[in-house]
Amino acid sequence: MRKIGVIGGTGVENPELMQGFEQKVISTPYGDALCNVGEMFGNQVVFVSRHGVEHNMPPHKVNYRANIWALKSLGTEEIFATTAVGSLNPKMKPGHFVVCSNMLDFSKTSIHTFYDTPERGVVHINFTEPYCECLRKKACKCLKKLGLKYHKQGVYVCTEGPRFETAAEIKMFAQLGGDVIGMTNGPEANLAREAEMCYVTVSIVTNMGAGISKEPLSHKQVCESMTESMKNMQKLIEAYLSLPEKPCKTTCTCAKALADFGGFKL
Image (cartoon, rainbow, N blue to C red; front, top):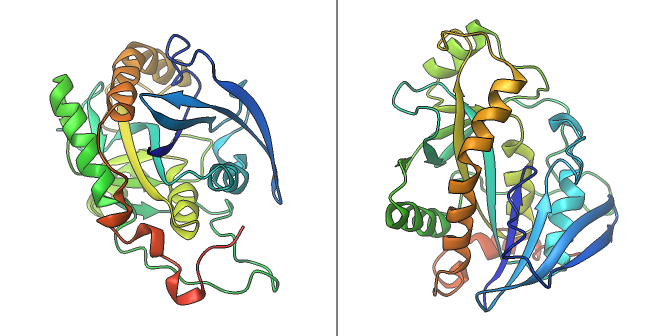
């Protein structure tokens, strides 16, 4: 049995597939996290709405630590995260999926670590490859099977938000090697690595970045684009959850990320 967490914005859960799931409030040292827990395709599955059930938590105030801690406490071993992103790469167009392969993190105030108190101690994790290569291959396999337009590599640029970026910022991030841009993946991926869980992000492009897009960016535009792509995202999640494959812990080092520090402890 795989033990999978799915993190995404409002709407990634498919009610038809989640029959019998139990809504649980998981208490953590960082606050409560709301999780939908059940079984799908013989696997333990936990859905977490990143921005809250009402989608009322802006990116810089998302309680990433509570979400990741809750998933870890439920025994989760791998996390499939979804994100809506803008594109800095002309080849990555609205509606395309991007299986992120690396990251540039420009977030500022979001908390990225569980290890920031004398009691927890100090930890320095290896973040050379922020996404689990094993999970990336699984995600690409599903996208190919579904016949969806996707890119098997892409550098995710994480900004603080909640505003969209300036045209000058978009130009700079592109020159630095960024492909897509969002506001959530920096702290989330870092915390998942500290908690020794495999983590992958599959982004869906909702718009071209500022200065690239012919029209001014708007929240409405992003929401409308995401709504159109949601059915494909739900198909992808279903395909990923149904993969008859073993957990990645035998083929990657994510589960041993803190081996030099005695392992992650709840």
